[in-house]
Structure formats: C-alpha cells, structure tokens
View 1: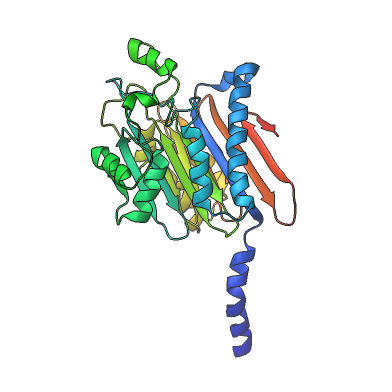
View 2 (view 1 turned 120 degrees about the horizontal axis):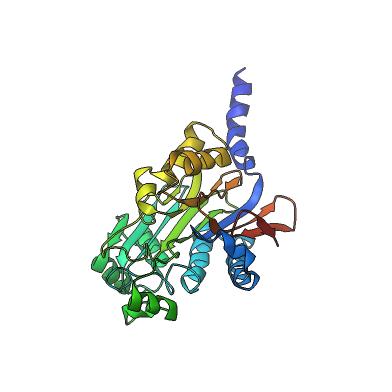
Amino acid sequence: MKHLLIAILLLLPLCRVMAQERDYVIVVHGGAGAMGGLDKDQEKAARYYAALDSALSIGDAILSAGGEGPQAVMAVINYFENNPLFNAGVGATCTNAGTFELDAAIMEGKDLTAGAVAGVKTVKHPINAAYAVKTRTPHVMLAGEGADLFAKAQGLEIVDDNMYFATPKTMKWIDELKKESKKNGTVGCVVLDRQGNLTAGTSTGGMFKKQWGRVGDSPVIGAGTYADNEGCAVSCTGHGEYFIRHVVAYNLSTRVKLLHQPIAEAADYIIHTELNTDAGNGGLIAVDKKGNFAMPFNSGGMFRGYLYKEKGKDKVSKAVGIGKDMKVL
C-alpha cells in the first residue's frame, strides 16, 4: 500500500502536465459595441477580419516557436496599439477635454504577478509599460504622470505630443464632440502557451468623451484583466464601470477554479445574466489550462478571433468574427 501511494504521488505532476489538451491557444478581441451589422459591409468588415487574422498570426509565430505567454500577448497588443482601426494606442478615443489617456494591464497565471498603467499620455505602447511595472517594480499599478515618467525612465518608446494618438477620425470627434462614438471598446489577448501557463493582457483608450482622469476596468486587476493557471485568463471589453462592480474577470476565473464550471457556461452566465445588459454591455475572451475558451458578448457585436493547435497535429484552427457568426480561416 505504501509503494502504491508513493507511485501515485510521483505521477501527480505528470498528470498535471498531461491535463493540457491543446498545445497552445490564443484568443483576441478588438472591442465590443453596436457593430453587429458591420459584417454585412464586406469591404469594411474585410479590414477588421484581416487585422484580427494578423494579430492571431503574430501570436502564433511566437507560441509555435515555444515563446511564453507574455511575449505573445505583448506582441499582439502592440500590433493593435499600432492599428488605428482599434481603440488603443494610435486611434484611441478622446476624453471630454479632447486629449488622450490610455490604460493597460497584463497578468501571468503561473504566479499571479501583474502590472498596470492608467491615464498615461505619452507612452506609445501602454501594454509594455504595464509589463515593466510588473517586472521592474514591487507595485501593480502606476497612474498618470508618474506612470509616464516611469516608462520614460525605463527606456520605453515615448511620443513627443499627446496628439500622436489622434487620427483624422478622432480629430473630427474632437472638433465636433457632438455625436457619440461607437468606438468604446478595448483590445485584449489571452494565451495558453506550450509551457501550460496562462497570460491575459488588455489595452484601451477608454470611453469616448470620458471625464479626464476616469479609469475603466481594463487596468483594474480582477475587473477587466485577470489570469490564474488554476482558473482561466480573461480580458474584458465594454462599459467598464459595470465590469468593475461585478469584478468580472476574477468572477469568471473563480467560477472555473472553485465551482468547476465549464468556462463557456460560466462566461455566458456572467455576460448574459449577471451583468445589466441594458447598461453593462460588452463581452470578454477567456481560456483555461486545458485550452477551452469562451468569447461571449451581449452587445451588437465584438471583434474577436481564436487560434489553437491540437497536440500531435501540425495544422492550426483559426477563426475571426464581428457579429454572431465566426469566419473560419
């Protein structure tokens, strides 16, 4: 009996490793909102489909080569931050003062380490600043001028003028500030890497015409971003105040970890039942340690995509979506 117990104990670590059913998984989002009809505009939708495909391919190149989750998450979000189609980095939406204040967060599930920045005005890639907070300070979040100065001191890319983040479209919003923008989402990425670790990252320009100094859910660990290897990795998008009140990202991970709910079931319940869908609209992406993932939303649409590779197979499975349906690539 004693020898049998020893054998079981020796096999436990192996069992934990074998629990990962997929080699690696990457899921991305580019914001949620009233864009469900966009998939009927073939020319415009094609630009978003192509951008989501590019983001997935960037992550795939890193993960397939054995790169770790944070590398893939930052590379993907850097791409989104450079793409004016999305509300992050260049193309970020503006405050009611006509300026730009950016937020970002990243978290690793293997050790629960996390970093975040809020209200930065000169950091070209806020997700990189968030990672620097995580890896180079004892803190979790830095905000405002202190975060900008920290990023500059760390040698991260800094822009000379806050208007760097403006595009002709956002400048029109600044000039008019009359019509509500539908570009209130964020960008995010969650990853299960080949080492079996989960990582989540989120970056945003925030809500259009937000009061200066407003911070949404994206940089708040547990609200808009969270990762725990025993639960799941989550990145949220939508009306941040409601996601903060419901601690959505942590809520989902805890349901998976402690209640052992399937990730899709738990995510659907939070998005479609627990949140006030009249006001707390939006969505999330999530992946667990076995490679199961979820992408629910209660708004008109959500820019999203997934890519995964099954163990023992060479081909990857990939799809992107805007409205209800997914387009297999």
